[in-house]
Image 1 (cartoon, rainbow, N blue to C red):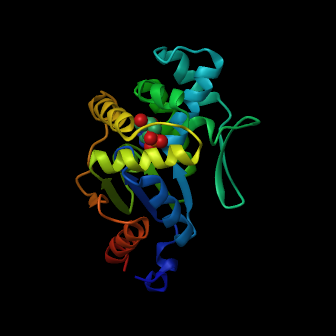
Image 2: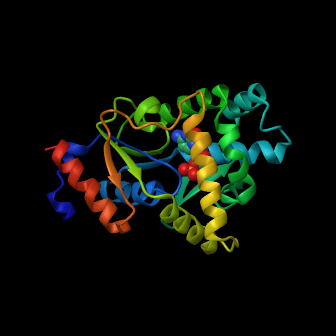
Length: 233
Ligand code: DC
C-alpha cells in the first residue's frame, strides 16, 4: 500500500481516533500515521501521565480527585516536536522520559480515573482537535473525546505481546524489568482502565477492530491506511 493512493486533500481536517489497551501499538502507529498524513499527533495517555507526574512532584495524593482536577485544568502542558521527536513539556520541564517512569505508570490509572481529571483533560483535547487534521490515541478518543471522528480504530493484541513491547520500550529508556512483571502490570491496568466508572476503555460500536499481535509496525500502519482509504474515497 503506497501513500500516493491516499487522497490527502480529501483527508484534510479529518479526525482519526485510535483507542486500545496498553501496549496494543497505539502510540507508534498513531505517530507514524500522523506523519504520513501530515496531521497533528495527540497522545492523550501522555497527558494523563503528565498530570500524574506533576501530582507526584507537587506531593498531591493520587486519590485527591478535586485537587487533581483543578491542577489538570490549570497546569502548563504543551506538546512540541524537536528533531522529529514529540516532546511533552510541563512548564519549563521536559518530561518526555519521566512520564514513562515505573512510578508514574504505577499511579496513572488511579489519577486518570477521577471524573474531575477526565473533564479537564477532555476539554483540553477537544480544544487541540478543533481544527481537525489530527490523529488522537488513548482509551476514550473514539467514544468521549471525538465521538464524531471520521475514522475510528480499536487496536488490540494479546497480553504477552503487549508485555514484550512494553519491556522493549523500557529497555530503550534504560529501565530494567521482566516480561512477567510487565504482563502483570498490563493485566492490572487493563482491569483498572476497563472497569472504572468514568469513560472506561470500551470498543466504540463504529470502530474498526485491528488485532496487532501478529502485525509489524509497518503492517499496522498499512492496515489503517487501507481502512482510511475505504472510508474516505
Ligand atoms: O497509553 P498510556 O499507557 O500512555 O496511558 C497511560 C494511562 O492513562 C492508562 O493507564 C490509562 C490512562 N488513559 C486514559 O485514561 N484515557 C486516555 N484517553 C488515555 C490514557
